Length: 331
Ligand code: TRP
Image (cartoon, rainbow, N blue to C red; front, side, top):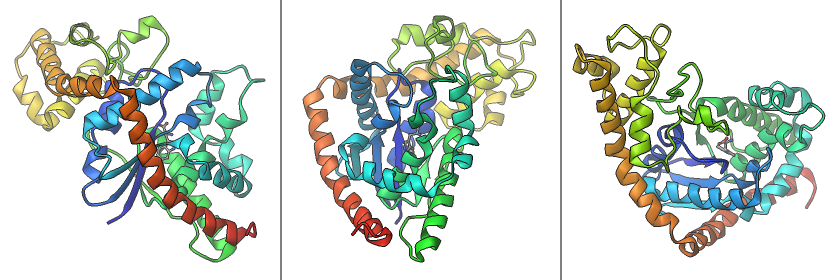
């Protein structure tokens, strides 16, 4: 039995990549572990976001958690900003991490490069500190994340080591990341060399399957995915990035090996193959969407779930905060 924790930042519309990489994996942890899953709403403020959009996406994310099968009786489901303790732990931790370490973070470099260099928020820079605070706050040992967050979990591990050795006690947990085996890199259907990520650019949105898209749109996007002229369904991400991405999506949905899928579509033309990918996606996403919309339509119920989760999360958080405060001399 281990303590596991993960979160999703409520920004923009969630994609099929979020589903494969996060939502659908989380329930598997709740049977044999103590699982804490939250909506990282404070982290959403690290880039400009409209308040109404943040509020609405926060409800979306918890609805996706529930639709995926997270059970509030088995998993502590909560909202990051409901737990004030994490802000205090964050203020303590910022003193044990170096600016050099934060400037080396790949995500910081990528996200800050897109901003006006004079207007880079301190919160974006310190993003991994708050993420480490999230992890330590609940004594998490296992942190399921996508590839792009592994570096942050490693940094949290380093901070814990430094902090614990400075005070010569096991004060902070030493987290390990776990990443999903299949489909961790779902690429854009229009630009298969780049990740299927949320975007404001309408042209790019054609390559992204949003979890709230209609069946018609999902099918249309898959049927018009970029491929190549070879007309052979074969996994070769370098030479055939489009087809390889569709194969990854198919295999992630059907839970089959790439080599088996290649055999299934041997001698198939791309149209037939794409239709099979669209069917596979809808077979899994269709029922998931139905559940999502049912949960999403009752915000009062979602508020109650957040409230109940916060009570449990606060219990765990206050134990850790007491321990840390005593160790550093704040108590
Ligand atoms: N950074 C994660 C994301 O981009 C969200 C997150 C915040 C998180 N704090 C965390 C994930 C702690 C795991 C553990 O989606």
